[in-house]
Image 1 (cartoon, rainbow, N blue to C red):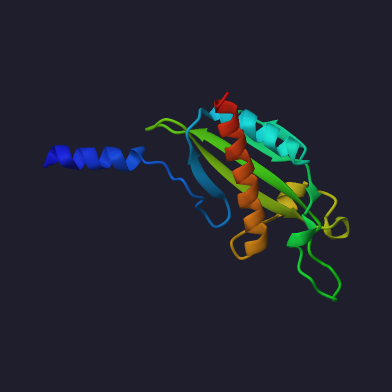
Image 2: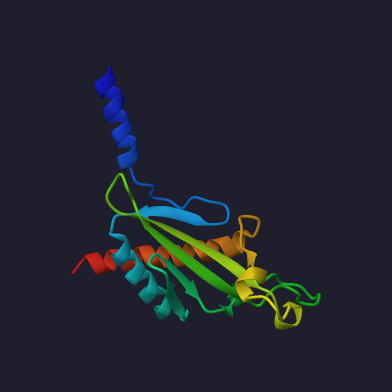
Amino acid sequence: MRYSMLILALLGTGCARMSWQGNQTISRDVSAPSDSVLMAAVQALRDHGYDARVVGNQTIVTAPKAVPQFTRPVSTAADTMPDSWIVQVDVTQNQLRAGSTLAVSAFLVPRASERSTDTTQKRNALPVSSSQPVLMQEVERIGNWIVEATVARKTP
């Protein structure tokens, strides 16, 4: 009985999350070392027009970039939605199993007229969450670029 419980526990930790999970920061397991995922993420973001910057050993933050036009609501009212966003990617090595955990989040940067002058952009940025499904789909799409780039780096 003890052995079957131990085997079930090990299988549970060994199974990787293959879909995105989360409300504000989406994450999933990737079967590659964290440094490979980090390098693939930088390349994937740059290939799609983002200015990706490695911050620390496990985090990438992009420079503000225009929010994709198709994600903005269609309205005749004055557009007050932030027009740019920052994408943040965190990669951590899994402790109990092979591979890494990839986490992607985005933050809307308020328009220049709405920013205060004494704080940084990230401090004023508004996190993208599941209450904004179109933007969260775009965050998931960015995560998929990174996963695809990681797989492409592993296969010759």
